[in-house]
Image 1 (spheres, rainbow, N blue to C red):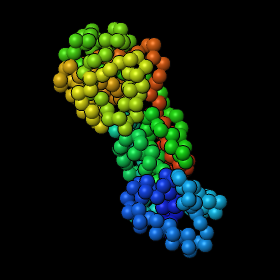
Image 2 (cartoon, rainbow, N blue to C red; image 1 turned 90 degrees about the horizontal axis):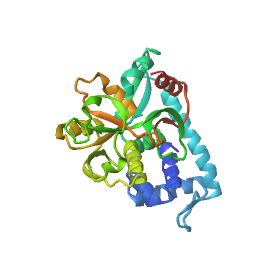
Image 3 (cartoon, one colour; image 1 turned 90 degrees about the vertical axis):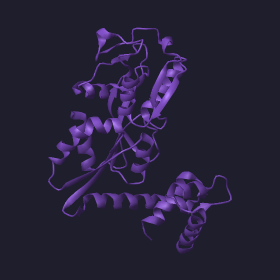
Image 4 (tube, rainbow, N blue to C red; image 1 turned 135 degrees about the vertical axis):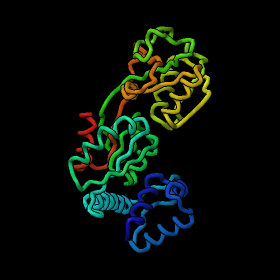
Amino acid sequence: MDSRDYQYALTIAETKSFSRAAEKLYLAQPYLSKFISNLERNLGVRLFDRSKNPLSVTEDGQVFMKYAQRILDMENEMQQELSVGGSQRFAIGATTIIGRVLFPKVLPEMLGSSDRLKIITTESSTVELEEQVYEGQLHIALISQPTFMEGLRYELLQSHRLLLVVPSEHPLYQREYAGMVRPFPYEISILNNQMYVLASKKMGLRRMVDQFMFEYGITPHIAVETSHYEQALQLSEATGNLLTFVAEYYRDHLRAAADNASNYFYFENWPQVIKMYAVYRKKTALVEKCIECVRSS
C-alpha cells in the first residue's frame, strides 16, 4: 500500500460519499470506487457500508482509518525532518492580509534559527488554507475567522477590532481624523444602503462583516467583491464613495504608507473581534517556533 490508499479512504470517510470524495480528490468516481474495491479485496475486509445513505465506515474500516491517519502524519513529519538538497522544508500559509503583515516579520526570525531551513509560503483564503493543512500540503497556516475543521488543531494568536474604512472623498469622512483610528461618530443605521467594496464570502474578514451587518440590520449595496484586501482599499480611495473594512492589525501595517488619509472607525458597542489563529495537524518543533515568532512580532 502507498499513501494514496490511505488518503483516498480517509477522504471518503470524511465526506461520507464516493462522489464528493472523488470531486475533492479530482478523480473520476468510477475510478475511485474501483480503487477502493481493490483495496478492500487486498485487505480482506470491508471498509465502508455502502447500503446506508450517507455511507458509513465499518468497524474494520475504523481500525484502518486510525492507522492510515497515523501513517500519513508520520510521512509528513518525516518529510519535514529530512534534508532535501541540504535544506529542511517548512510550508507555511496565511491569508493575504496576514501574510502581508506577518511574513516580513516572522520569516527572517525563523530563517535565522537554522541555516538549513527552506520556507515555502502560500497565500489563500481561510477555507482553502484549512483544507491544505488537513491534506498535509502545509505544516501550519495563519488565518482569521476559521471554520474549525475536524481533525485540525487551532491556537488563538491575536485578537483585533474590525475597522470601517471611510475614504477622504466620502460624505461620512471626518477630516480631523485623517489616518486615525477613532470611534464611529454616527448612528450605525447611516451605514444602511451605502456602497461598499467587500472581501469575497470565502474570506474570514467577510464573515465577520456579514455578522456585523446582520446584527445591526444593515443592507449594504455591494458594488465590488474582491479576494484582495489591498485592492479593496485602493478602490475605496480611488472612487471616493466606496466604504470597506479591515482588521486593525492591517491598519497598523498601513501606518508606514505614504497615502494613509482614510478614516478608520471602530464600533464601541460591538464586542466582536477578529481572531487570528494558527492551524496545524501536529505541533512539531518548527510549528512551535513559527507560533512563537508570531506572538513576539
